[in-house]
Amino acid sequence: MNQDHLPLLLALQREQDWARAAQACLVPQADLKQAVAAAEHEYGHALIRPGDPFQGFTAEGEKVVAWAQEFSDAVAVLKRCFAASKKQAALAPLLERRSVSPKRLGLPAPEAADIDQMITAALSAPDHGGLHPWRFLVFSADQRERLADLFEQEKLRRDPLAPREDVERAREHATRSPALLAFIVAPKARMRVPEREQSLAAGAALGNFLNAAHQLGYGAIMLSGERCFDPVLCAALGVQPAEYLAGFISLGSVATVPPQRKPVPLDAVRSSWTPVEAAPEPGTGALPLNTLKR
Ligand SMILES: Cc1cc2nc3c(=O)[nH]c(=O)nc-3n(C[C@H](O)[C@H](O)[C@H](O)COP(=O)(O)O)c2cc1C
Image 1 (cartoon, rainbow, N blue to C red):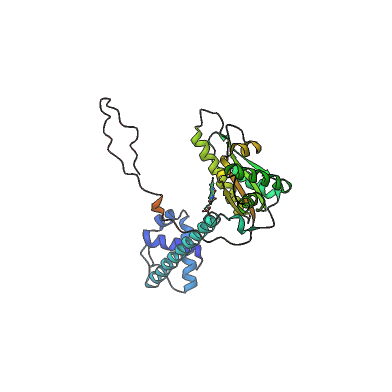
Image 2: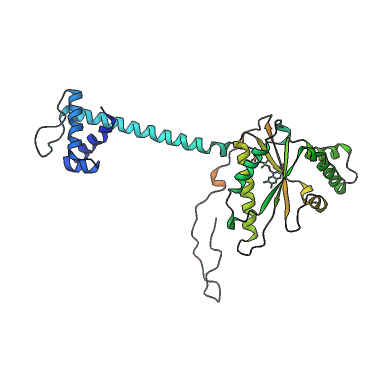
């Protein structure tokens, strides 16, 4: 039977009336009658008892309707499954992302055009007022040794007696990853957008950047560490007094796949609001401001 005819037949069973069934399916009655006639021709049996108004289905008709109902239910289940797997596939890149530590990264480094795409993704993150209160500093390959010198000097400022291996490790933070960027949060002096919202916008931009890196097939990780708080290093990187160095992003191809994320139960971060009966503040008759409870 033509699959398009199934809803017509089922509507006729439901409504037990030609006009109402046709109306329910938004088709002219003639189309409905034609669909029934086609099915009767196919099965070689009358499906509807003769007579006007509608007299109900014959025994064979009831069987066809029961089959049509089963088929239609199965199709609905199938469509739900397909829709669910489509949703899963759509979210997979977000759910799969893991940070990839520098020791798990290898060559080739992302091309400049790929990094530009990641920054473009960062620019499409939620951003109150469109201030983009953040910026990326890209270090070219030939600048990495100079950066390593700065990391070494910072390490020695913090720990003048640091063993050579610790100093070497500090240098490696500048040289190890196939590509390296600094992420600088640059809040803009706008009363309209509080600084805390600008910090959130910066975090959202960073998240988009890391997700874009993952979706382009690269590994990435954001690492800060004490050096980000060092004013001499920050000044050498051109971080302005109103800005702060949030960290360094290592980028590269994934040489070793990181372990899977441990699942966090949703209820750890989700709860339903329980309205709190607010008592008037003593003496004012006003309601306390903070009446939301987790
Ligand atoms: C701003 C910022 C700074 C971070 N600094 C460090 C760091 O210094 N050391 C570290 O081990 N992880 C740091 N992380 C966490 C890692 O980047 C990473 O998110 C963490 O290892 C969890 O891995 P996941 O992203 O796969 O969940 C930082 C994350 C952010 C957002």
